[in-house]
Length: 511
Image 1: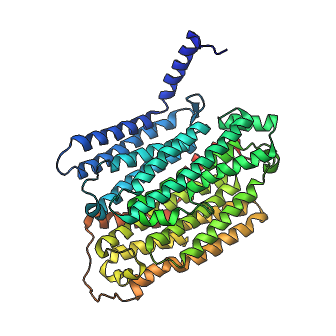
Image 2: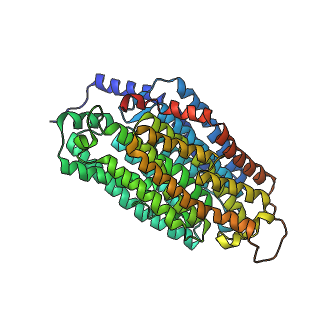
Image 3: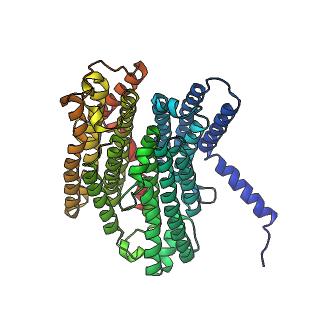
């Protein structure tokens, strides 16, 4: 018979919730910012787009103060084990806030918004909502919280992808994204339900303990974890869960494409790492013994397939956004190489690679937006002769593309070097993985360099040599991102140390 909790138990629950709220301040602050932006959109008259964008930028910057204060708080679980605060979560909080700020800046530069929408309305509030969801994804330590935070990000992403309602490509992209997202979420939840049926637990640490102590049905465990991997793989855009990426990246507003390719992918990576590093028991057991499946081989297969497929298919792309979409699939494979290592050095390498990807991918999409503003096209052939007409844009895009390839002296080179070093440090068995990574990077060199080839070595078909001005603000931001990409390629120690600090919580969980 069901018994109501006693007064003492209720008081204990209330006290626990009050204590937990103190660890949730950045999320509460961002939620208030979300509501403030909705109110501004409702009450402000006239030119409110600039007010909304500035408020969003200042508001997101303000959240960094509350995140910084959390460094002095003790690491641990709260809200009854559903949420966790540790160095790993703090890394991604910074990452997602800066991603949101850069998405706002890129949006302000995109003239297509002026043509496609009369009022930007709730757009910036949705970006903040997505930041909140991704922060929650990185801190989730419970199956229910994982699902809720993923759905918050997904629903927001569907709306933002189709924000150009009168644009057929944008509407098609949003519909495809919704269909693929609904299927992957359904598969993942089904996998969660099977794991809950096996363990009667939703907390990741308790699931790990139950599986190690009481065993499992191998067939059920194989099936459930494959379903869960489908949900995570969809989020990071890895093969064979990548089908949504090219169409969504091409059809979505370019700032949202950049945002999804960087921030949403990083959120999926954070979840994948936390699930497999914590829910999968370690401590002397092999992956086959505990999970009933060789997870290492499965992740290696997904990683290699993503690197090969993404880079090879990108060779035939003529639309620059679509080319970068297939490039993003390949980069998901490189990121998985760091996760496969499953140790602290691999985690550090993965986090550093995400930082390099943040800079070079946002930078590349920003320049693509500025070029599209002037040419009205994202077609590769229309980039001919732009090196003379837009010299700074051409130089910046070339630097970002060299960084995406992984060539020195850029930050992308350091990211890939760390990933390959983590593989080689693990032993000779991983040498072939590093070789595949190097060879696929050579393939990417061809299609990335097609863009500078068109800009500098091929004449424009319009025979108009007049220089195209992008404005002082855009030039300053382009130059800043380009300089940072080169600077961190030469002086990467502070970011490497921060990545090492952020991976320190795995010192207990990993060998």
